[in-house]
Length: 274
Image 1 (cartoon, rainbow, N blue to C red):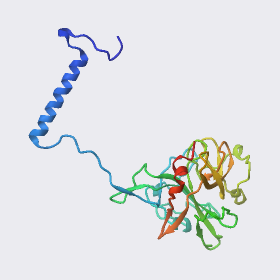
Image 2: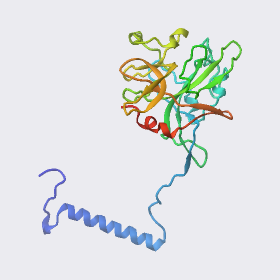
Image 3: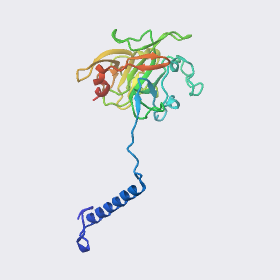
Image 4: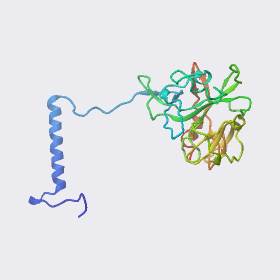
């Protein structure tokens, strides 16, 4: 007799019928108690009220050996334009970025876009779509003429004019989350099919550590999803991926960076990776 099957008990009652009788009896006592007290013993169903915001919110990451996730202390906060333009960011230890001679050019972080915020203004973890926001020098940045969804930053001191781009952080190969400068790309994965422009500045491209696909954020190109949806994204330069990493059009609203959700692009927002 297999585990969980009924055993015949003395008196003709089975184990299953006995357990069922006890459960029904317990339910009856609970109901009676609720009626007498006038209160429900079980809490009411949870209801959630919130709003979807087009802003970007920092998402904490778990780094591996040798990886530094500098933005983790900002998890849950909205990304501001000043986070790309100031030498230091409130909440981040002083000197964090001083090792980068091009600072704050090439600063980038992981975030979520279109997250849900509750009535207290707090972001609901797990909501939204993963994204990368990266500041890049404007002199060699290139995008199709019709794509205007980048934020332009004027020269600051010795730093040249630059742009901030946002990319949907789901690798088009198998939907992993690529990273931006949390770890150096190993030399074994630098046999690029097309050299990324980031190399001209001594910087690595975007790297997906799952299967080593890489993308050049300085070169946005026209691409097409297998479902025939056209989009603009960061050029694929290495690995098993076969097309661009989709870009998210962005603009500045007050002090925040916000994305422009385009219903026409919903197909690649939700189903562009295989």
